[in-house]
Amino acid sequence: MDNNRGGRQATAEEHGIELMKRQLLPSMLQDIEAAPKLLAESAGESNCSIFRVPQALAGGNAEASRPLIVSIGPYHHGEPQLQMLQEHKWRYLRTMLEQTQPHGVGLEDLINTVALKVEMIRQCYSESTECFSGPDLVKMMVVDGCFIIQFLRQLAEVIRMDPPLNNLYVLNSVARDLLRLENQVPYFVLEDLFETTNVPEATWSLANLASHFFSCFDVGPDYVLEMLINIKGVHLLDSFRMSLMPQSQQDNPVEKISYCPLIRSASELRRVGIGFKQGQASTFLGIKFDSKRRTVRIPQIKINDNLNCILTNMVAFEQCRGQRDGHISAYVRFMGCLIHTVDDVQLLRNRKVISNYHKSNQDVICFFGDLCKDISIYSWETYLASHFSFLDKSLKYEQAYLCWAQLLNAFHDNPWSALSGLAVVVMLVGIIQTVYAVLQYYHPK
Image 1: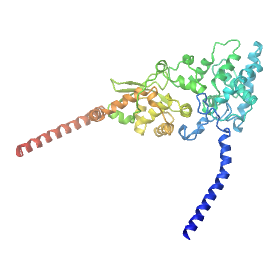
Image 2 (image 1 turned 90 degrees about the vertical axis):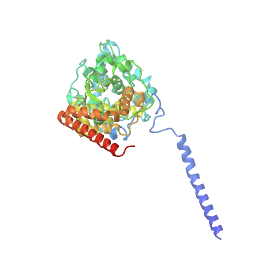
Image 3 (image 1 turned 135 degrees about the vertical axis):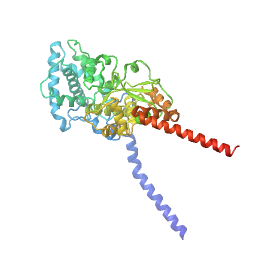
Image 4 (image 1 turned 30 degrees about the horizontal axis):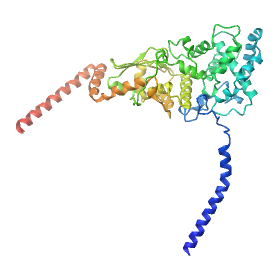
């Protein structure tokens, strides 16, 4: 009788599973064959370069990749809070046409320029743009692309514009919005529109305009306006990222090592004899290591809202695209490793490596800590590869060097205290030798 009950239960379960399969199979097969609605088919390919930023990236601050005052491209197009400047884009387009029409270049030429590359444009976005028809996408690229070009010309004082875009707050806000990852257009769109509208031929190239724009963010005392001439990224944000690489690293191939070593905090490194000094370089990425003097030279970095925007979006770009040469991510990880405590921040502030006029030491810890969250780097394929290796090798001699380094540090900070400590050590060694001699006398081997 129990066997019959067990058989009926098995049959009922099999019947239930059969019904479930009949319900699921048609819909699941349909979903498998359906085209993606949100994700673009080009997502994950090399030509995909403009991303929606997951909340986990950008230090859990995905909002930093979204525009605050002006939308560029499809991701935030039409959002109510961005409509005020949307109207001013048409004024920028009108001023551009006023310059080009006397030379035979009109609106139809701009439309033709962009319309030829609609599919290429769609492939640059990780999220599907099918909600925009071909004409709508072309219109958006023409209006947004011309706005960016005219804005760059305005910053370089090639043209003058009326309010509100001559207001300092609005200018700064627009400038940051043009460097947000979700607010990009492909660089080739800007190039094509610039070449079409560059009549008569101006002295400022698009690369010069972009480099001048980047220099407004105070990324280094020797940032050179011409350094972008031979550098072209997939969009403005990427071009800025590439231009931050020290010139020596742009000209030479990246050194590779076979592993990713760990880096200790600045205070710990100092205790084993590694010194820190303010370095001189074209950008804040120009870190130098002096193995003979056991010194790390780091260019000064200014912790402010501009830096927050720049680093957050560049890290998000490298992470979303899977850049193996994630130089910004490596820099952020390196600084995050150095900075764990307020003592680390104070040490680097004293060495003029960090400038945080309106930020506390704890704010600096949180700044780099948030940027480092959930990021992955191939640090052995970045410009810091040999530097990571240098610090790793230095730490292998930590135990042998530690006592001597601590004594030197103590002597530097308080010579009399250090001499007293040395006297105590000498006395202890003498006592141990005396005890050992007495034991040898009474208990010879």
